[in-house]
Length: 76
Image (spheres, rainbow, N blue to C red):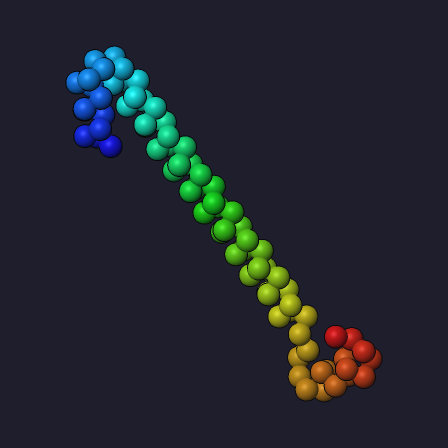
């Protein structure tokens, strides 16, 4: 990208090159922000799944007798 910007600078002049460089930099920041947002979304989904698993583990029967009791009472 830098080589392309330098080639554009020679062909169009330094002002146009500065504008092109600013646009390229802005696009790079937008891409980085998008990746960060995706990463945050993924972390949130992982945390939600882990919380659901922890809650399910807390509700599990303590022993075999409790499992039998839950099955007899149709509590699944």
